[in-house]
Every structure is written in structure tokens, then in C-alpha cells.
Amino acid sequence: MNGMDKEELLFLLADFECSRSKDSERFLRRTALKHETKSISRTYLMLDIDKSRIMGYATLAFKCLDVKDPNVEPDLIELMNLNEGIAQAYLVGQLAKADDAAPGSGKIMLDHALRIFSKGKDMFGCRMIRLDCRDELVDYYRSNKFQLIAKNEEKDLNQMAIFI
Image (cartoon, rainbow, N blue to C red; front, side, top):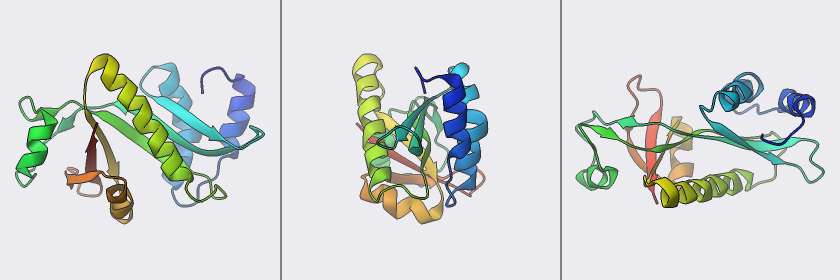
């Protein structure tokens, strides 16, 4: 969102529609710019060819993962480099595409996010990327090489990770 005229940006944000995830739609419209300004996260927009519409977005941040579930596979525990049950991790906080985005747009945005995190790993370290997703998205993220870790504390989202 950096480098865009604020008025133009606000128009683009207000125009974004994602009927599959109204939470993602609301986040982009109401919260993404605030988080950007406060350096809580960075939101990357995928625009259409004439840059007049948002076709999708990914919000990236850093957020530790508290690993409490005793059923997490030992191989995953080893990869996480836990320190007193806490794993350092990059976070894909939001990933959403517009209703009329082309098939494969989500994969393009996810791959872009992974490339950004890989650059971060080279500069700062940290090899784990995490996300939380609804049950219906677990197979999608597994097909993109994420591994299921556990349910979150509220048991409504699946915590998944990939290692770079």
C-alpha cells in the first residue's frame, strides 16, 4: 500500500468485495491501513491490469506461536526451534481474493508472500511461516506444503506452518 495516493487507495479499499470471507473484506476496508501506519503489518495488494481494482491482498506480519498442544508431531517441534514453548514465526495474517479474481490468484499471492518471507529469513533469520485458517481451507494450504500444527485455543481455526 506504500506509494499510493491516499484518496485513490481509500477508494480501492472500499471497492474490494470478497463474499467468501466478509471478515477479510472488513479487515481490508477498516483495519489494514491502520496496521500499516502503526507498522503492525504490511498489506500487499494485487491490482488488476489497469490498477483500478484490487483483485486480492495478503497481510504479512511477525507473530510468535505458543505451542501448547501435546499432540504436535515431534518432527514439527524440532523444526520450530521452540524456546519455552514459543516459536518465532512470520505470519500470513490475511489472504483474500476478490469475487471476480482469476483462478490461481490465491496461489500467486501466497507464493509472493513466501518470497517476501524468504528475503526476511536471509536478513533476520526465522524459518517458520504460520497462518490460521478455517477447516475448509486446510486442504488448500496442505496442497501448498503447509503442515497442520493444531487448533487454536478457541478451537475455531487451524494453525498451520511451512518452513523455509
